Image (tube, rainbow, N blue to C red; front, side, top):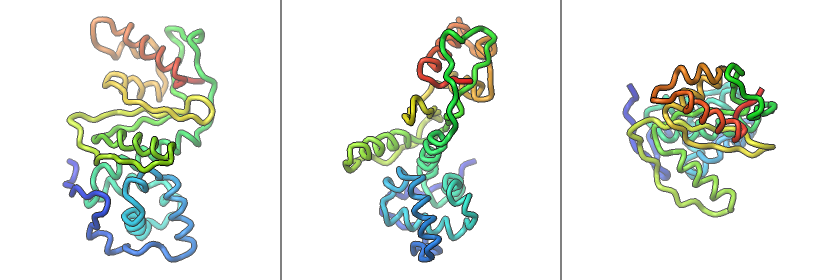
Length: 229
């Protein structure tokens, strides 16, 4: 069961910050703080400089492993009940985009390569993130604002009635794309992350014509550059 959260937003000061209310003063910590901010830019933008620095100081006071400091922010926010749920989910999206950007490239699958038994696998440069809030809409607003060098005017994410799954992948060069996927496609994508086939996908889909639905999804993945080998 998810622990109760207080709905703090930018400008608030949870009591937890008392343990790490001052920004890092050690030069090594300052460098690490800059590196963490670079990996979680949308989280930093959403929280604002003061709140982000206090949250980061609290995080760094508890996590001293440099490798985890650079990667474990989402887990820290999710597991700390004083923070709103969307803090951790926004951090997940930030981390997913960095992971996809840094992943190795692969040859893209084409429609000509597709057969009934051909292994279908998502390109290494992909991430699948499940959300319980509309934080992906906030992420998109902040990304648009950063691209146009304007100040974002975004509303606080709201809770969803049903979890939402977002696929993030590298399309061409360094272009990162993302989109929300339907429930049956989310299950199919997780199968494709492990490796599957058109026949296997169709076997796991309900409805009147599962093979047509599976084929439609696979062709969409191929055309968007999400499948590779």
